[in-house]
Image 1: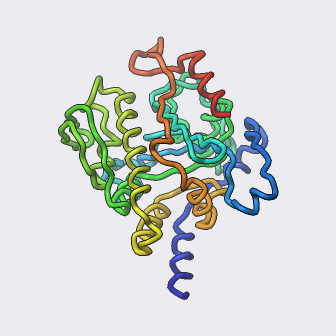
Image 2: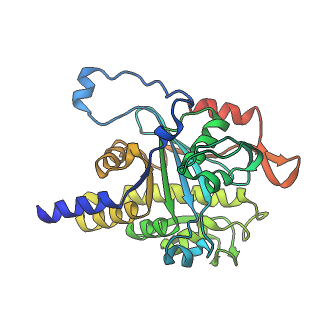
Image 3: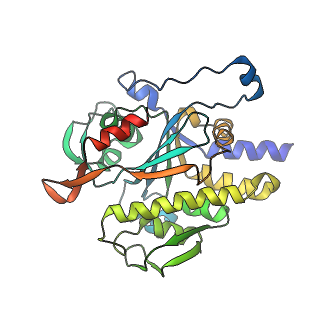
Amino acid sequence: MAGAAWAYWHLNQNIKSVDIDSALGDDRPPRAMTTPTSPESASASPLPSGALNILVLGSDSRNGERNKDLGGGSSEGARSDTAMIVHVDEGRSEATVVSIPRDTLVTRPSCPLPSGGSTSIAYGAMFNTAYSVGGPVCAVKTVETMTNVRMDHYIEIDFAGFADLVDALGGVTVTTDEDISDEDSHLELEAGTHHLDGKDALALARTRHGIGDGSDLGRIGLQQKLVKGLLDQVSSTNLLTSPTRLYGVADALTSSLTTDTGLNSLTELMGLGQSLKSLSSTGTETVTMPVVPAPSDPNRVVADEPEAGELWESLK
């Protein structure tokens, strides 16, 4: 009992959180309306089952030696290297994962700063600068401004955390359609099916110059393969039958995790995970925000309307 209590305390202490609701106040899109649960079904299934929109960011944090060794760089700060909106349908057995290209030019709203004051509105700013100038709060506000969709939760994981999570799960299997040779991510991979460890999975998630035209859109395709591969790995690994592996996965996940305050305890994270137990790769659709080259810069993209607006509307 003492060991279990210590493990719970340790995992709980791992989790870092940001109070996004208090920072943004009421100037946000409305929460999605969910179908009321009948008393009978509530007693039979106490887990939450309403639709959710979760902003998931992968940050290239420079904090810690392992993040630097894995490609975070040597300078201070971090950027949102990967951004996905995970929309979970009501019933939580199906989901849509929408990738937002980090090179998208957006209107970055004024965001409150932890130290007081706020950032200035920026027009035609790269999407990933929102995190750089205003952290998770500004990332969430920028996404909500561009989509008019309320983000129910926020989850961020850094380089080291992603690599450790993949290793704790026993690796991830993905199939690539072409040979990959990327000097920046240090990945050499022949076309075909591969079972990757954490370091190589992270390199695959960061690869862009070794595939296609070298744009962020090619990298997004690889990241979406990894999402489905991880869902398959979780489904095939019965963590509940191995307390040691379960603890390893939980420790890897919580050690490098930043959430909103609605998910900042082990109990809340476990509740979310259990409510998603019916979710699989076959029930998960991966799409990319519709974009076109930016008129002002062919190396950047902007939302392709009305297709982008229709996509956001489908997430409400």
